[in-house]
Image (spheres, rainbow, N blue to C red):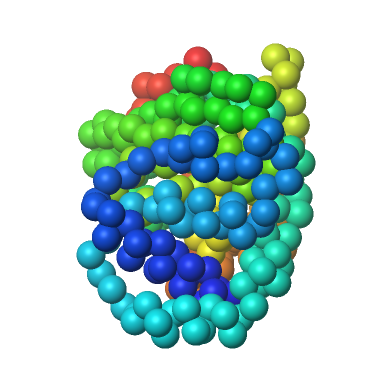
Length: 260
């Protein structure tokens, strides 16, 4: 598939560049984006995404061959097509409605082996068009609690401009929201679908377990099934896993009373 190959190659170019600069993971620098933050070019969003991936030492392609192949794909057109396929269901992000506690109710279990995951997002710095926030995850592996700490960045309100680096050892690249749903009584988003340019891995987070089960679960299932997130090519015939909430309440103390 040209789009899939194109995204892989774009990531490879920037990962190789990052290796040359040293194996340091850094959030975006806001000085590198247009001001005031509107109408960021689609290619710039994908370039920023690729530059945020954790470097590796593996080199699969020659840089000259990569450049020639990317040029033959007419990257702007391919990037626009991929962008539209990812973010057609997204409006501008209101990042303050993104903060707080989230339960993971759908996950790519082949990547994320842990169970009953919970995320906390806390704002560090916000301007009209940019933001930086922390990400902290609690989960269980063999009944032991594990934690992962990461960060998030917003470099504009456009879809694709919010990135979340989880700190998980298997998450080499960040996630971005591809769909957000509903508002609760506090004016916060009720659920969101997080994914990557390859639509794998994918996670679905919710604030309210009961409401998700009764109001949003079928909507989410239909969305990921119809739009290629349920079992994308990169997932190698594996499918998204829907969390057994009742089991999580029994084994994870943070699930007690549903919405603590």
